[in-house]
Amino acid sequence: MKNILLYSLLVFFLYACGGGNPVADKIFINGIIYTVDENNPTVEAVAVKDGLIIAVGTTAEIQAFVGKSTETIDLEGMTMTPGLIESHAHIMGIGYNKLDIDLMYVKTFDELVEKVAEAASNAEPGEWITGRGWHQDKWIEMPANTVKGFQTHDALSSITPNNPVYLAHASGHASFVNQKAMELAGITPLRGEKPQQEVEGGEIIRDELGNPTGVLVERASYLVSKMIPQDTPERAEKAMELALQELAEKGITSFHDAGSGQEVIDLLEKFKAEGKLTSRMYVMLTSRQPELLEAWYKKGPHIDPDHMVTIRSIKLNMDGALGPWGAWLLEDYEDKPGHRGHETMPIDLVSQVSEKGLELGFQVCSHAIGDRTNREVLDRYEAAFAKFPGVTDHRFRIEHAQHLHPDDIDRFGGLGVIAAIQAIHLSSDRPWAIGRLGAKRIKDGAYVWQKLLQSGAVISNGTDAPVEPLDPIPSFYASVTRKTLKMTPEGGYEPDQKMTREQALKSYTLDGAYAEFEENFKGSIQVGKAADFTVFNQNLMEVPENQLLDTQVTMTVVGGKVVFRK
Image (tube, rainbow, N blue to C red):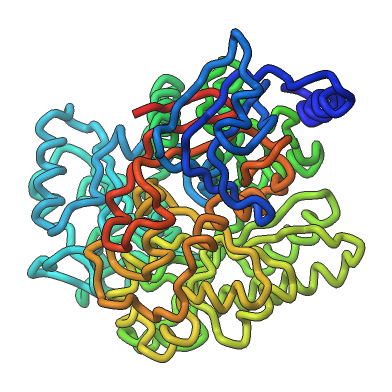
């Protein structure tokens, strides 16, 4: 598919000069097709050749592109959209979540302990037990013993005396470990004059006697996680296979991987060479590996002419999550006086990487949840832009942009900074987030999607999987209803900030493509663009709101190839 756009232009030139209709490889007919093209918003059919769209129109019009070798796919009234673009998630996390203990849906601490006990019963002595997905604010009840809003390790340790346990929080910004793991990491009780164990950018949660509770916040988790044996190449490949299968099943045709190292890039290149990719990959380089950034600074961005594996952006992790009180705020947490969260990397790193990115052609994508982090990042972006006034199409991003001070909202549009949001976080977090921030901060600056759009900012959408399930339907539902997945409250939270269905679809397609510099290649169903499509069992643009969550993906098409069919 090299020089794919040049080839497509040649085909259309020959057609325009009287060469007759090109014969399509595939046609999709009898559908309700939302193109995300303002000039031609809905059509019935699409013709595809060599992975590109060569015609759109009515079913009758598209029949003119049929030849002996053309495959006809009858959509039978189903709804097709441009292929969905997941603009912020973690590819290996999705795969490993299927190999480890999945704690995303546990409703109580006791249920978590039961799942670990089951894994321990099948483990060899000394073997690590790992899992991810717990979130104390989503449990229907907390255990009897808590410290600083978190559970303690006693029940977990009692069932795993011979196995170290590491359970990552759903947000990825905290962990829960057992006694065995703490012993191996040298995390001990504080006694007498012994100096306190401190971790820059993190915290070991302790009780009033100085005993570690087993909860490690932010960079303190690394004390234990660094001891977990590294994965074998075979296990990494299996995780990648499972993740790509999940992407195909959920209708994701392009995927922004929010922070990976060279080993993941190499694995993606291997899968590409073997024809095993089910999605186009846009990888952000993790800033947690300074040597990785230095290596890429020397060779520069890799913009794949095949549009399958591109590396041209850098991910900065600048604060924590709201759940573990790690998001960096301008004022104290409502439910934790005297605490404002913290930066997780030196904030000056934003300036350093931004200036380097502007100089060398790398996009910068900064994780910022709290209002202070968002302000600090915007300040440093703005200063870097002033130093490089000749770079006008930087498309720098803020990942999450969840909680903003009202004074900073218009700066997104004014500076041309993309807000890479995950609407599903509102459904999951808004019921308890008001306890963290209070009613005024929630109303003025939390999940303010319409305010961002009105500022002129581009919004790309996603899920942050495996923090949340990869399924785009709940995130689309949250975008347009601002309700929990139990369909509450009536009217939604802060309903004036709902997206329209058209805005939500655009955030998952064309604006997702814009967020990776690919809006001229994909993101809408137009002649000359990639034949990336997602097909649904019902019309998600028109069904009643209370039926939206029943929507299912029935087909996923990438470059004209059907990678999933239900």
